[in-house]
Amino acid sequence: MPFQEPHRPETWLATQWHSFFNAWVFFSRLPPPPGIRFNDQLLNHSSRYFTWVGAVLGLLLAMVVIAASELWSWPLAVAGMLAVSLLLTGAFHEDGLADLFDGFGGGFTREAVLRIMKDSRLGTYGAAALTITLLVRWLAWTSLFEQGISPWWALPFVAAWSRFWAISTLWTLPYARDGDHSKSKPLATRFRFRATVLALVPVLGLIWLLSPMIVLSLILAAIVLRASLNHWFMRRIQGYTGDCLGGAQQLQEMLAVLAIAALMPG
Image (cartoon, rainbow, N blue to C red; front, side, top):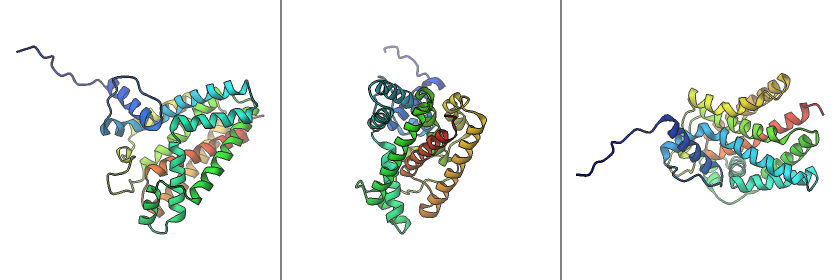
């Protein structure tokens, strides 16, 4: 009988490695390295790396906007950066924003809201929300960079910051759908303390570059928006869905960039 090496349990570090790249594939369109395992359990644990994926994507976008600014003005460079961000994520969060506003705007009952949110077609409410948020993000990022703010920290920070507050919805709200057909169902778990600390690492690694007044303003603004959105989600569908998380991320990003642009010294 041939010798068989005994099974060795996977180390904690290896599990985190696979979990990160489960998040990487779920939240971006970029390929993972070879040998990554994918399953619902790893995807369930990957929510803690939502912010990490955002920070890496922010670094890639910083490279794009800095290179583009060497050729064009900041408005054109930021427009190109936003276009690349849609390609890198497959417009994943923008799709959630559009579905959120289509469902909440067009549905009058919980069942109708959830049904509309699953519809792949874009409606008037979703189109309006996408147009406004993209326009505001374009103007706000342009204003920020024209003030001399470095994309190298601003883009990774806001990407991680907005994703942290979006995923914090899992602290308090239940998952709204009853079935197992949603693409975000594997993420529908409570967010525990260890996961929260891990998710905060890229945020805390960059937030020290801001003044205490700006940090306090950002926290207060994010808390108010989170509380308002969570109240809205509970009132309309008694919980959250993946589209709610995507919409929350987009709105938190827009609010953060507006706040930084308004408070940073020009």
